[in-house]
Length: 387
Image (cartoon, rainbow, N blue to C red; front, side):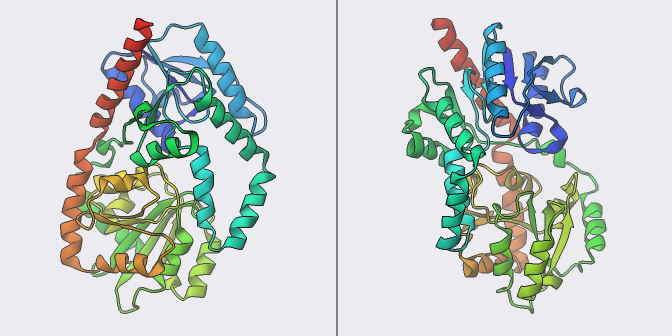
């Protein structure tokens, strides 16, 4: 097939959707499909050599740039005859839309949950009303999904599929669910035990300590503050540490840990370009997010054999079979989150959950994801040819 991928920036080293598009492009090329990339910037060294690049110019302020990129991309595609075109996030004019970040409308609603009280949430609502980017993205999303020429929608969890019906009245049968996936080969290592020992030595963690890992760039949305509140409820006699990886600016959360009296139980590492050794060194992942369509961090942890504690607002929880391979909690329920973390102090449970997590991680792989996405592409090609 001749396939066009459309996304403003494809720099796979940055992670997230950009890493995914690089993985997808390489897999398509390996199967002999012609891959076209429509983007404003890219790292050609991280993409297949046979990729056809189409530069789309998009500049201006943040709230206007997606509109300019989408309009220019639609114009460029009109002069081509691809079997299938697929857009990611804020764009339109493609045959398929795969919003890996979920719906903006759902994200905006869930973002309010990160505030602890009604007053804070009310102020946040007022702030959004005054934010041109919020208005712009909400209007753009309505154009994407409510225009006469609607694309075939791919959602990466049943949670997102429900959001399409809840916010835009798009029925479930019009949305194909293809769960997110990661390439487990990125986490292969013959010297994993050595890496674990070296990393834990850097952290000055003794073998008897249980280590929970938190990985995120957006600390507020992913629930670091309520996680620290829950950590304060973990008995001090438990040999337990929390390791925080992600954004380099973590001082406000250090101060929170100090106020709660748990600073000596938290290790802030800041940004790590490759967190693989952190996964190897930890005993479980804790990800009490307020919104994640299908967290790649959770999938990476499972691939490394780490059980996962996550929230009911994460579409990736649909992959878990609690309590076998992890636990699902309410991020605002500090006692529940603390109890979940304390379960992993039990070495026997931790070992069983680790084995189960690794098995869960193999049930849905990038290859499964790729084949399911190809089925969607074939469906679109057949429909276009029939028309």
